[in-house]
Image 1 (spheres, rainbow, N blue to C red):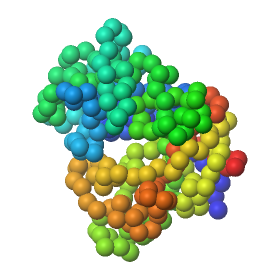
Image 2 (cartoon, rainbow, N blue to C red):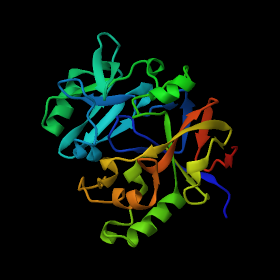
Image 3 (cartoon, helix red, strand yellow):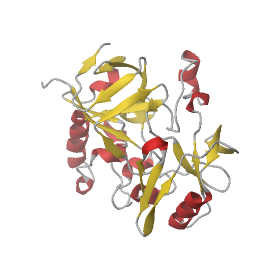
Length: 275
């Protein structure tokens, strides 16, 4: 088997928007630098994701120096957005969690409202050190923090597991929907050279010199059925995961991890399974 290596790195500057590939990334306590520090909220303060708004998949946010963004989407002129100055906050809601955020300039919210056809606001997580991961992990690691990611700071997937999943899809009820690309799973890090599903059992892994501790396997939702280029939805991969790759009640693909050491990861870094 080939030596495991870091195949690709991805950040999603705005939660639920298209990912942005990098050659290297700094690892911060709350995730990769620049990953999911922004989000769109509705008029009630709820975070808007592809679960209810698949059209977000067609919009993109490229990082700018200083933490700002260049927004782009079909039918709209690109817009540069600066990090807000931190004066005035807006409470965002994720499930039952309350998160203090800072609204971006009004022009950015008008841009998103025009794109989505609804009254929404672009917000920035000014201080990610104030947010904790899911409660069960936070009880174990009370000093751990997380960005505006769903649950944990960083998500790893593997090419071998995607190949295995696509083979199962090809043999299933909806073979016409495969093979699926990795962007359906919106990972931060993609690894090559592993065995299929090996990540399910990892407890500690090093990417280059940066050591990560495994949190949980990633349970999957309807977003994975959304074609990230067309926004059309199908049955896969949830139909096949339900039949072939459950852990408990969760349909699993990928592994959440938390950095134990700071540092920088780079495409091509060796991967070492420590535990």
